[in-house]
Length: 610
Image (cartoon, rainbow, N blue to C red; front, side, top):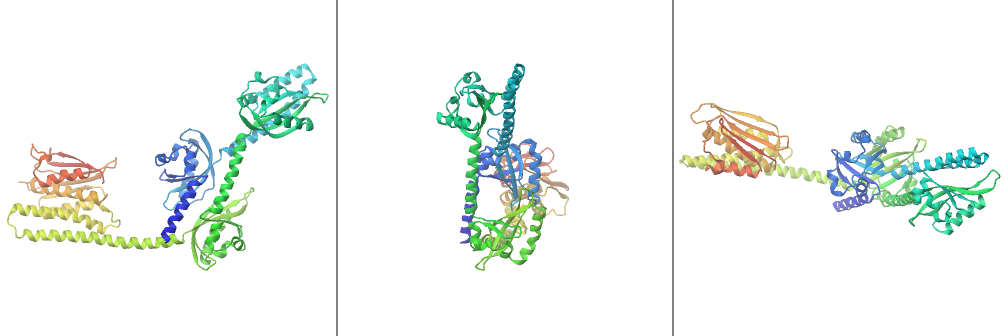
């Protein structure tokens, strides 16, 4: 039952991550292992591109150092706050402002959270532009009033006002007393789609969504003399947009109204961003209430300020009951005292957050194991405000891990026993062949039995290595090679003769599927050298080399300085069972075989691990 609940938990947690309006990336060894849908959208990639993408491919080059410092800090156990970066979308090359933070996962990978703050940045820039526009508006009104003093000053004021108006990033429109357009700046041309010549002298109503919208503006200006409000405008192509209009009447030196002027900016994107922010806040609240993990806001003295439903379920308390308790009351006393150091470091600013496993006592007296992550939230003056704690119930997981550990230990023992029995069975077969050989006088048959024994021993060495190995899946191949070769020297009666073995072996570990065929190849080639390479000679060297190439493939060389192979030798058509086995086994491990008989015999095999 516990594993079923765990699977359901994982599924709900995955659904939560998949639906977060925040980008989630998991980075392992400088590559992206996972990206949720929002992250895929932010980066402009598809799910199939995730495993092929490196952070450097979307990170803006000027932020490489900040990003490396962030990753290194997380991997070093630090808990960084959010930092601002720029990224380039892969599909459009668009530049986005983001803020990101992360955490180190149990497997050593890094999880990053990515928030798109481009809109927020744009809003800040728009606010600055609005302030500049307001200042420009005031300056423009002063210049317009003063221009009546003299014709020369009027011309200069008009030129000055024209330059200000055309350089403004906001739309500036002015009218005469009858609300016919007599001023229309470049920003207005770009937004409305009209040229200045097309609107000069035209009624102001062509810029409004309808007459009712214009009437509302005109009545306000006539009654009060100014207006600051959101209105709906119409472009030349008939489409509508929302703008924020700041307008006022224009008066001459006598105080008479001679027209009106307005400064406005398109806030359609801003309104959309506000709506998205509202929806985002609603979604975040829903996530908070419906989250599968417990979430709490905790006062500096430890009292619960806000809790979600999941935390109430985990601790078996109602929200009102928890608000009367402190965070420390629910923990096991020894663990609480140990964690006080972390809380003090949070308050002092030495760390940004901490995560630890702790045990809590539920209302019903049962113990709850939870992984708790605590962060400190500061106010605008950078003073400690409150803590945010996230609780993950790991009670069932801890029990499952304990059971899994015990199961793994049992299986390791069983697997070791299997390899040990396979080795023993092969040794029994080898002993039977040895006994059988005592009843055979035919030298050819005896040779065949001995070769069979050697092949069986080469395979039994693999199982003996696995039995002694800690991993149970890989063989120390350099030791395995030496065991095979020395066994063959002993089998053919050459352990103290004039022949010597020479090894140049890189310490590498191979799996069972690769080790057995490679061991049989070595068995056949070394046996062949011992039987035929040194006929009529007292001394000689058999050399075995094994190494890993730069491209990841493996190279095995078995050579001797004997008499070499016949001139017309063709291994593909060899009648010897041993050499036929060599070609078959080389094919089995997807290898390439090259034989050189220039000076002795040299078998050169390049292959890849199966």
